[in-house]
Image 1: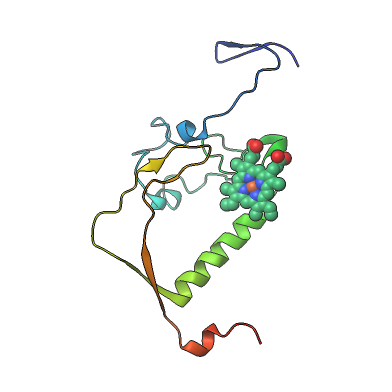
Image 2 (image 1 turned 135 degrees about the vertical axis):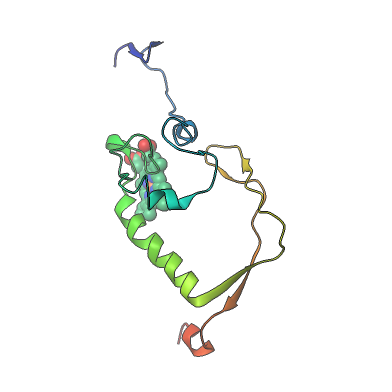
Length: 132
Ligand code: HEM
């Protein structure tokens, strides 16, 4: 390792650098309304974005040689798991209050206020049979 310069900043060798993905993922030069929950952006103007570490404006799985080795597994399983929940349950809110989207701080970001929902079976009860 050697001393280096990143974007004009002198970085001595041995420095531990943490990349602030929260900031990158809310860069207003890339994302319109960066703090708004707009999943449809990935079906429209950002539909060609690559999640696998090649487009540095969105790095949910990291990038480079230490990026997440579970990326392909996660991308296969997550839509299946979500589709199963949506297919099998009617999901309702417990109140009509606007959803509090504020975030807690930490190494990873989660909702400051948990979202409470009610799940009701959508299918006939035989469809939920598990075990022997
Ligand atoms: C939505 C699901 C997931 C997300 C968003 C995610 C995200 C990440 C991120 C951001 C890293 C750090 C990459 C870096 O340091 O640059 C990581 C590392 C890692 N992930 Fe995932 N991950 C997910 C699912 C999984 C799954 C399903 C597995 C295993 C089956 C997995 C196994 C690992 C391992 C072993 C590392 C450490 C890699 C290393 O340090 O070399 N992840 N993941």
